[in-house]
Image (cartoon, rainbow over all chains, first blue to last red; front, side, top):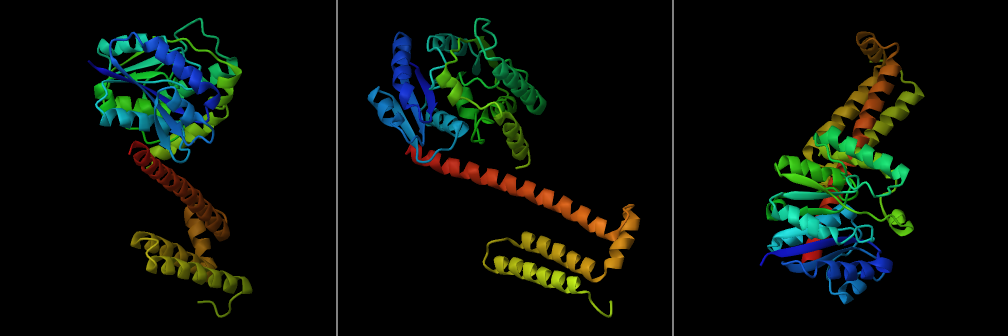
Length: 228
Length: 109
């Protein structure tokens, strides 16, 4: 039987991660694959690691905080080294609906190397206006740098098949990773599909997510990367 | 060679000698590589020449189409500074990536 790893990068998510993992376990329990829930604890100073462990997740701990991108790559690297067949990355702040994992997995099984869960393809999602503008701008920047047009480049809900797990190698540490991700897709000629996903914006997830003013910083870091 | 130096020229030359000596010391310590040493020595020799022969910078200014010799120095310095700050940022990013790799290896053990 094939193995699915659900990867949750987490930084100080003690308040909510227990709930997210429990719901996740419930929603994926009927999938016909071996399942692993991996929390990448990115140097949290709260009880994120202890709670995740208690809920049955495998916890990989960064001794110091390295950022969302670095945590994501640690999860992918784990999948690579442990012969995981499918990896799905999932936000640990409770904004994603774990029932959507089934859809992502189905799309991966159909042969896509990468599946991106898009918040914009689901018309029922209520995305705050400012956030919408920022996300569209990020899509534009990704298109400008990497020539790939995606409806939701910043989505943290993504699925990878074995081929993608082996090839994707992310080097940026923070939120710019979402754009770098598409550079990797292009470089490695990986196929990708977008599927609509549900998203729940709560006060909590909005306070944890990408700060709106961070976009300029993200663009600057991508420029630095080009000059490496 | 001018027959006398203005006080400011002496101050500049002393500062340049100090800065060049730092570059040589850092090279001896193995903290910068030969390429960086050569780069900095060229910068400081150039600066010394500009301080000692300010008239020559005026000729360069005329050649480049800039009004005054002093302006040429300011423009060149600014361009160099911007470039160096940029390089520094790139280097810091590289370091950040290396730190992440290290932290990742520890996490995956």
